[in-house]
Image 1 (cartoon, rainbow, N blue to C red):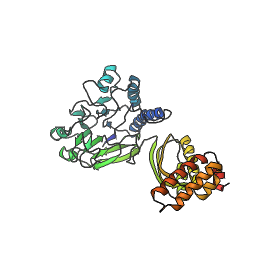
Image 2 (cartoon, rainbow, N blue to C red):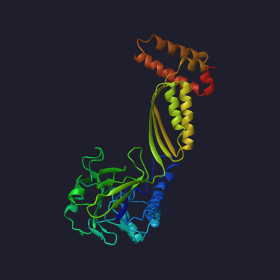
Image 3 (cartoon, helix red, strand yellow):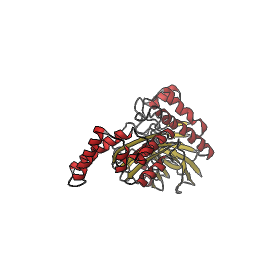
Image 4 (cartoon, one colour):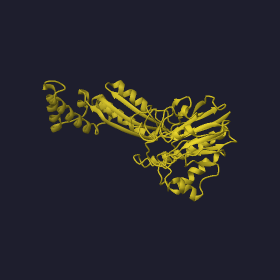
Length: 383
């Protein structure tokens, strides 16, 4: 029995530049920490090798400190680490890989596979066929040479590649760096370890994407895992098990609010967010003044508890009720304006007419401004 830990897309050095400066360094640090957990898992499960299917680094220009910290993070597993360059850290003539080697930062048990050559690991019982990227984008299938590559018959044939399996992934991914969907079959591979797709995905019994071990985007695609792969003998079907390794949970919260209970349910969901959550909130629909204030309070609480929360309320229309208007305590000129706007709504040909929508929008803007001066409880009670 030969056992592997399959992982990919570490993206070490990613900066999360669009995030709050308070949170971005913590998310970047999590990418180093998850590598340490991978090393511990490899030791715990006594794997024969760790397969890292590309994009170890997010950019070629990571700092020397980050580069050294990454290789130091591997110390928890003393067996072989097999790494190929991906599109983010391609094996250029001068690359992050050549710099790491020049600095002497690469441990002896780490094998950067920078050329498409068979590497035999006889003691561990396998030969690896790597397809490293030598540039960011290619339009030829770099795994094609696997088909004719000879390996000892007594050893497992393991493919290691980074790219897009053609015809099976979404259109925006299914383009450059193509990989034939039947490569494991045509090349007689016992297992094909893939990277580039950031979620965990089974292509067939012998072909898997491990996904990034620490999520980095708001997609529900099974990110945050590594794969434990057991192969009994050459020709035997791999037994693949997902291991959860992520520190942070990235999630999209898409809500439609029409009635009070919708807002209450969303508030309850936001109150469940904690320190390991990175959330993207998008709200559509309509809400009254009191509901808006309760929602804004819930967002404020969630922002303080979650690792990161970004909120887009542009699709949520404020529609003040009669009680909201009465509770705004408007007098004088403002009271006259409110009465005129409400009269314009009442006398419009239909609620959806341009005149009615303009009056509603103006009333909502005025109510939103005035509501900032009135406590939530007072607005809700209409006092």
